[in-house]
Every structure is written in structure tokens, then in C-alpha cells.
Image (tube, rainbow, N blue to C red; front, side, top):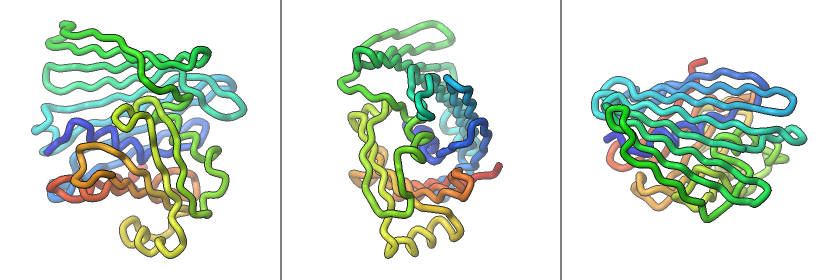
Length: 245
């Protein structure tokens, strides 16, 4: 039930644009109820930024996933108010296993190095380095934190295509759709009324029953996602992330 890539999609709900922010979410999955929590922290100075996302399985999911936890880290610099990633790291752990993926972004030569390490009982089992076949200034975290500057009109229907380090299985491509007015009742039925704007992110992964996974987002007046629903996950229905803080 607890798919390997599940936590990655939860963090896509965390679109946070304040200079220093903390936000918390409860995550539920179909008939299983609450299966995890997510916490996000963003800090910006004049020239640099850091983002930390912590995700942890709870309840039955904690048991089935051997206490799965993830920590996503992005660090980089700021140019004209836009965050540009220099390093993106994912730390995953469950049971006696820990894995790290570290992406180092070389903007001068427009290439991205990925280092993968796997540990068992704290002993290094695997250590590989390779270069991705695409380059991007954004990683998965900075892309969503930068959206306010990348989308000039959140009320105007449009399909946006972006590139992000960390989205390897979809060759770095991330698609975000601002729905037309006629589609808003559908979004409001699923996500509730009162959002400042709604959006749909397409996630191309094998975890889903269809070719594209649909992540529906309701963003509040403060620029923070209040609710996100990941539609039609195999067998068990929708994943829902609801802001609690």
C-alpha cells in the first residue's frame, strides 16, 4: 500500500511564498485514514535561501513502511527575488536502511551531478555518481516556491511547462494547469470553496492507475496551499493533504 514515491508527491502541495514560513499538513489515503504528516520550513536572506521539508509516515502506514521518513533539502542563491537551486538533497529512511540522493547543480556548465548512497545498519552499501541528461535552475522545491513569480496571472486559464531537478522519471518536466472558469465547480467540490486560486499539477509516475497523476491544489489568500488532493491512486482512491498550521 505504501508506495516508494508517495512522499515525494505530498510535498508538491507545499507552495509557500513568505520569506520565513512554517507550515504543517496531515495526509490521508483512501480507506486508511491519516497516513503521514508533512512540515515545511523556508528561510530567505538577501542573497541566499534554504528550504526543509520533513515527511513522516504515521498509523498503519508507519507499520507497513517500517517507520518511513523523508527529509528534502534545497539550498541556493537569490537573483532578482527568484530562488535558484545550487543543491537539492533527499534523505530517506525505513527500518535499518537509509538512502541519500544529492544533486549538485553546475549553472556555469549547465549540468547536474547526482550522487546516490545507500546504507544498511549505518554501513555504506552503494555509492554512485552520474550526470543527469537535463539541466534546470529549479529543483522540485524551488519551482513551487517560485511559482508566484513564474505565473503572472493565477486567474487566467493556461497550461505551464517547467523543468525541475528531482523529477527524473519525467525527464525533469512538470506541467501545471490553471483551470478555466467552467471547471471551477469541479475543483470546489473536491477541494472546498474560498481558495484564492486553483491549479492542477500533472505527475507522470508508475504509481498511478492512469498515465498521468492529477494533483489538485487549492491556494489561499496568503499564498499557502490549504488543501491538496492526489487523484485516483492505484486501488485505494485519493491522497489528501490538509493544512493544520
